[in-house]
Structure formats: structure tokens, C-alpha cells
Length: 377
Image (cartoon, rainbow, N blue to C red; front, side, top):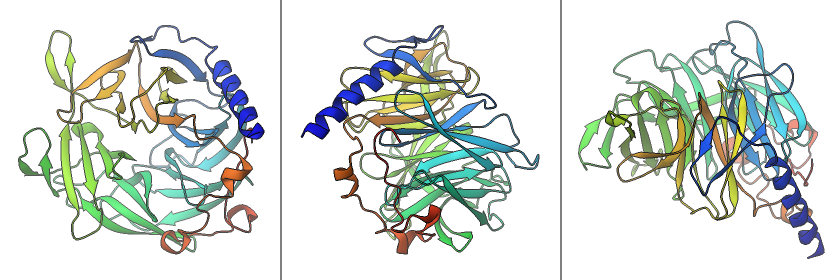
């Protein structure tokens, strides 16, 4: 119990320190409080995707490099403590876009080159080692963007399709095999879907599959960014797969209800925590806080606004909460009730999903395949 008390005190200290930097020029609707979580370290710019492993925050910096990787440049993924201090910097070849921690192994998956020539880098945050995986030719003609883990399966969004209508895959399942990623189509870009507001059934034409997340029910939520819509997929890849469509809009001053493009969406999983989001143009990562969040609430980075707001999941109407932004992108909810202790680490799932997911359980030389992190690194 004493260990948990010390961890709680340290957590409060971290949160207070991170909140000490105010945000100027941006406005959050009360009772929300907004602060700057982090600015790029030297040599990095354009913060985008955000991933969370307990006290550890990972931010991918796009640096303005080509989303095809054809310029031969690299990006940085920066690991922060919860107080916004830099813990470690990783370099990956290509333009980083997708970033997610595998909850089974605690390894960080980083996907590069969303438009063409994609690759996957799996990072062990404990040993700081990396392994690069290659994809074969893409069936949809583009690259890959984001990844989510559901049960013992990994799912990746198939971005930048070459054709309209898009008859290629929009979501694929992924298995690691040697140094390659084997993929299998789960959702096609022209699948039939039920429209949530109207209950009508229609064919999709997903022209911009982008960010993904899981909702509280475990459904995959895909953002088709330029199409101004979210796609919900339940029981993915099974005979009873079900697809729902939610058009996105907001009340634009002087124009009424207007379709709006969004980037990342995050669901609240606890009453206690904070929302981190990046702004690519302002070159900052912000922290949004309130004393009590409502679990299940969906927050989104509406780059077409630009603002951060909450989504009404029955209508798709977004209510702005943070304004004065320029290019909101990555987003994650940090549950501050889940902290890292040796006791809790020993109870984690570990390598139980390796047979289904594939890959190297020894990435980084950790004999049991886990990347167990204690508070503070």
C-alpha cells in the first residue's frame, strides 16, 4: 500500500508540473483546462500520432517529410514522461503516421509512409531496440496508416486508395511473419453500411481511410478523413461482421450544420485522466483536463474546423471545446488511475497473443517478450 501511495504522490506531482505551462491563443470551454504538454525537441517538428503506455507518452513527429517515403528521410518518435520531459528519442525510416502500443506485449508499433511504400517498425520501449517489417504490394494501391489491437488480432487502415470507387481493402488484419507483414482484407472500401442517423443502408466509397481506435464496446472505429465520416466495424473479419456509418458535422457560425473533416478520435475510459492532442501547425502537444470525465465520451481532433470537440454518436454533430487551433491531429486519452508498478506489471497478459499476432517475442533481447516499464522509465 505504501508503494501505491508514493506512486499516487508522484503522479500528482507529474500532472501539476505538466499543467504549469499555459496555452496562449487557444481557448477551452469551462470547466475544461488547457495547457501545453510538450514542444518538439531540437530537430523535430509537426507532432502527430500519440500512443500511451501507462506513464509513458510517445509522440510521432512528421517533420514535413514525404508520406511516400520517397525522399529517403527519417522521422523521430519521442518518448515523454507524464510531466512532459523527454525520456528517449527513436528514429524510424520514412514518414511516421500510425503509432500504437500492443497491450499484449507492450511493444510499440510505428507505421510509416501512409501514401505509398509502407513499412512497420516494432519498438521495445524497455530495451530501445527496433525491428523493421516490410509489406508486400498493396491491393488498394496506397500505403498503410494506423493500427489498433482487438483481442489477439492487429488491424491496419489501408490509406490513399488509388481508385474511386474504392473496391480495395480499407481495413486489413495483420500478422508478422519473419521480417514481413502478412495482411488480409477485413473491410472493403465499397462495403455496405447502416447509416446511424437515418437507419438507411448504402454502399460506402472510402476515399481516405485514416486513423483508427476502439470504442468502449470493442468495435473498430475508422476515420475516413476527407469523406467526413466515421465507420464502426463490429465482429471484424467474422461472418457476422456489421458496419455502421456516422457522417460528421458541426454548427459553423453563419453557415449552419456543415460537414467537417477529423483526424484522431479518442474515447474516455475513466473519470480520471487527461486528453493529449497534437497540433501539427502550432507545433505543440496540448493537455486537456477536467476534474471528472464521463467514460464513453468520444473526443475528436477536427482539423477541418479547426478545433477539438465531443461527438454526438447518434447524430455525428461535433461540439467544439478547444478553439484557436490550426491543425489538430493526434489524440489519446490518458487514464491516470492506471499507473505502473512491479506488482501490476507481473499480472499483465505478456506473450499470450504472440501465436495469433506473430512477430518476434525477443525484440530487444527481452527473454519473455514483454516491455515492462516502471514509473519514470
